[in-house]
Image (cartoon, rainbow, N blue to C red; front, side, top):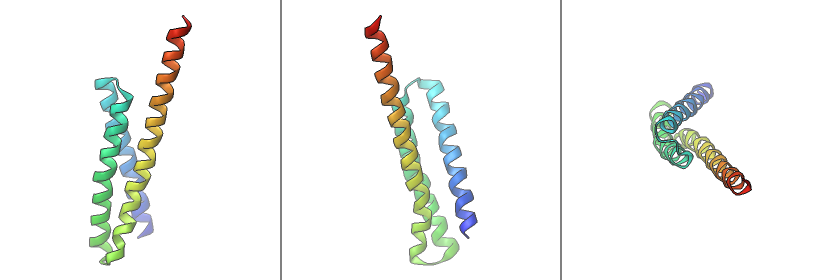
Length: 97
């Protein structure tokens, strides 16, 4: 069962990042991408929790599925930090010229 949740976690992270990349190509806004991945973390965490609940059939199994949402929250935090860093670099370069 552990391998199932690891595969599920990797799959959801890849899907969330692909959706975020498509959103970035459309809007050209990293902050919007970070917010989109944050919302997907909530959605995919809920899906993982429900899958854990139905597959393992134990009340504590929901925490296995919530690990998926936890890693996606970390992922959205990293994207948010990259957006802040890119904004700072862009502002520094624009003031330098």
